[in-house]
Image (cartoon, rainbow, N blue to C red):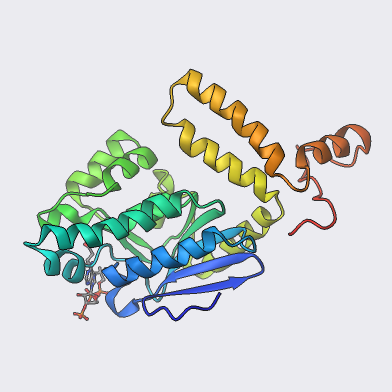
Amino acid sequence: MSENYECISVDAVDRVATVTLNRPDKRNAMSPQLNSEMRDALTKIRYDDGIDLVVLTGAGDSFTAGMDLKEYFRETEGDPTAFERVRDVAWDWQYNILRNLPQVTIAKVNGWCFGGGFTPLTSCDLAISADEATYGLSEVNWGIIPAGLVTRDVALAMGYRTAMYYILTGEPFDGKRAAEVGLVNESVPRAELDERVAELSSHLKGLNPAVLRTAKETYRHSLDMDYGQAWDYTAAKALQLRARDKEGGRREGMSQFLDKKSFKPGLGAYARPAGSDA
Ligand code: COA
């Protein structure tokens, strides 16, 4: 997967696509062009059967400094149609596509993460931060509010009191605090970030991708349903998984446990059958 993008880069190695926001001079601020390139790249990844995992990160010392204050906000001021055009592309990749990718997604937060950067962060399934990363819902300083889905997503990840605190104060916080409040799964020293994400990627690649895909879809969609709907939807997803799962993980796992006695889930992962992708 080698495209000539200017504001991002995509490297696909061993079934993992690393997508890097790549405007380090502008602290990876998300300009209309970057948003458009992200939409293109993620659409390609979405339909690529050779990719099981996506890592989203930033070049240099930033994850992303948020939406581009000049190109996204100032240059569209006074022109609602122009603003809607760039806003819809941002919404498309940050919410529609990224959140609903069939592949598992990991945000690798290497540095600055501000404002609109919280949407791609929370749209990823998992997030690992550098302790040294700095986060900020800085909008109150700009005369704007955390818009798009930032408020909703931050509330979901951090909970009511903590989300309200950072939304109202704009106070920055570090990676350790992000882990403490549930915005990311864990935080490690910057020097160990690549290694920790590689380790997590390696674990996830050893699991059945059809199961992971269906598990994340079920989680995301059932949250918006009432209990009866969620019960029935989950039953239907479980049946869909049996049609989707080329390696027959359900039958294989049970056989390893009940017949071969070669696998106990409490003690380790089941061995994917020979010929599986990982
Ligand atoms: N939009 C557009 N440009 C941005 C940007 C943003 N969100 N964030 C940084 N940049 C640009 C700066 O304007 C500067 O451009 P220039 O070299 O042409 O002057 C360049 O990136 C470097 O920024 P600078 O502030 O000098 O870097 P720094 O390392 O000293 O500080 C930050 C980094 C992230 C702390 C600081 O840039 C910042 O606070 N950015 C705004 C973050 C924010 O509030 N985002 C929310 C937007 S809603």
